[in-house]
Picture 1 (spheres, rainbow, N blue to C red):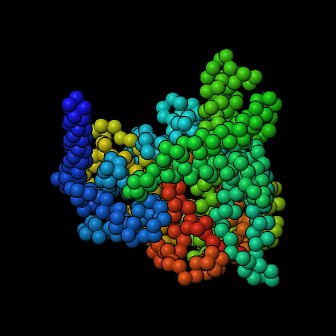
Picture 2 (cartoon, one colour):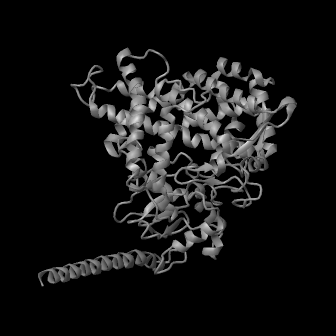
Picture 3 (cartoon, rainbow, N blue to C red):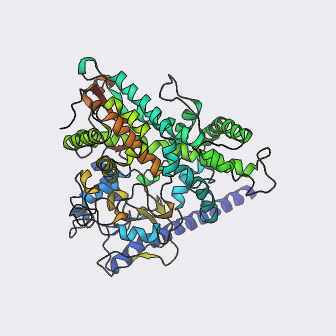
Length: 564
């Protein structure tokens, strides 16, 4: 009798709890869906919306039109190309596009106008959205300058800024050239004999090793030699595995329900232990050797200058534990951000030059004119006159145009109550309270209101004088490194790396995609071919953008004929 009563009470309790949870779910669904209806009532253009599914069918359309491994970032470009499908009266998406994907998350306000974007990344610079900071949490525990806000961010950003100054990076130029020269030697080894094409290989694998070696030298003064190792170092393996686990959380942005599983925590702790064990000896070495009198200042050098500023009782002999934890977290985020997107950008720059041979010819001609007609003398020319790197306007145009059409990261911000955005030429106010505000770097970079011929690769647009029809209209429309005070601290390092690589590679090699050879190597000859917009190479992967299959290519040595 008593047990049956107890069972009955338990069933009732479970039933009441279920009803309450269902009621809460339905109420939140109503609130979320009502927000879009309220926007529409104000005359704000919105994507076709379902009371039941919100905008999840739109993401379904994107997924149906693209390969299964397409990166969510490609959604921005896809929406531009399909604008009239969803906004019949517009040729380009409105300044703010609202995306209601609840219950995946609360939804995004994607900003396609640079003037509107400046209102939340420049003045003011809103706090980072939790989905962005949570992405880094397994790697840094929230102790890094990307995740920090307010005084904590300002303090550590100011400490690290000198390490990424043009002066410090030019002092580091011999080390950077040394690493790129190893990359060049590897390309030579992969080229065929007698001017023939060599075997297929994944370019991103080579560029990742290159950029990893460079950031280790810049941050730690450590020669890791990833480019010449037969097996990757424990440091690199642990970091790449951690990035893989971090990227699991990005599935929610792709409207996939699978995120990080609890059992991943074991691997996350193991990777962090390996990373700490690899980084601590470098920190301890700097603490023991005292001040660095070299012109080149690494991240560790700059940090330990302040070892007693946060805690007067701390010293190089007895550093504060929290200080060391923060330094290690920042080193990890620099190693991650300093190699990943730059490695992919090198691949995409090669792709753009392959597809635009006239631009490649102009690039080579500029190198002849500034560095001399003999490509083998380029290293000596740069070492003797480092300023020549900044005397290559067309080269910089190639780099900036690559980054304009292929921006591989963008910021997400968390707006306060009552916050709204405006755009030029309209009195419309776009409320963004409760939305994750996502700067569409691909969108602002293709906005025809700010870019003449926005979908064309035109490096010369960066060299023409102001007033020329090709000249960029608004600096905020170029945002591959984000905008405002929270822009990427490593921008100058990335631009210098890309300059050196273009100078040492363009005149020495021909490089092209080699998909037929790749298919044969992988036994994929009769397998379905995945393409985006007719291209085998596209933005792929969870979280961070990577070129599909690491961009299979082959290279050949070329006989350079100087431009006349």
